[in-house]
Image (cartoon, rainbow over all chains, first blue to last red; front, side, top):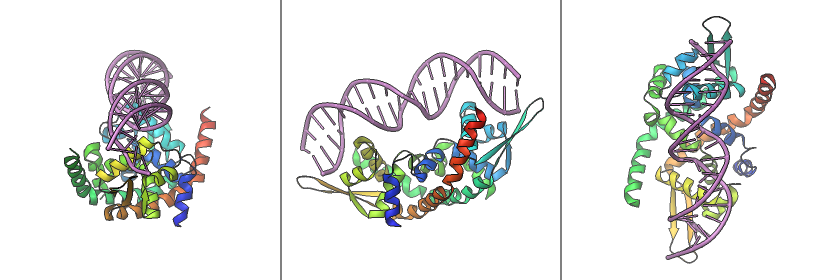
Length: 126
Length: 126
DNA sequence: CGGCATCCTGCAGGATACTG
DNA sequence: CAGTATCCTGCAGGATGCCG
């Protein structure tokens, strides 16, 4: 088990699933998007646009497309005017949510310590 | 609980602990570094340098400094020639490891599906 | 050995305008 | 409404060289 981590990391980024996955979720918006869909089940493009504060139209498009290509969410388009597109998590995407929530809880719990540590660190170094 | 996620995301990136934390761990090297230390307990600079395939000296320095400032690891320097510096996780850093491992396992388990999905997606779109 | 300083480049990602 | 297309900029991060 111990040696297992080492091996995976030494294989390089490309072949390390954890790094691969995190390089996507760790970007500016993917995490938020997945959590939004986890909360609401199904959302339209503009609903996501409004919910995720600060995201640009372009980045929302890119983020959704990436998550879709990874099979984490589905894009359902209705052929009508005006258009209507709905996004929702796939079963695979759903299985990811608990792990994110677990990390989410950790972050919430330890954020005070982390922030305190950061402040302290800066003071010492200057 | 449901509404909680929404609120946090709407607060903006700066105040959302999960985004804050993930924006650090999600970078190119932090994850690998933490897992290495989780595996080996204590490591010197050059040991990390060799273990984390592909990382540059500069980025290792930056990554270690960031993790240290967040209070996730400690830097212990020995006043001797040649210098010797040891890195190890703090208790706070240790509490993070299980969550990362959980995500790590998910990534390993589902990577085949994700890769298959990616390949399929590209074919369709072209 | 374990860095820091400097230079340089690619590309993530914002702003803006247009479209089916 | 739900996007594309284009342009533009900042900065992440690599390469290289120097230092205690």
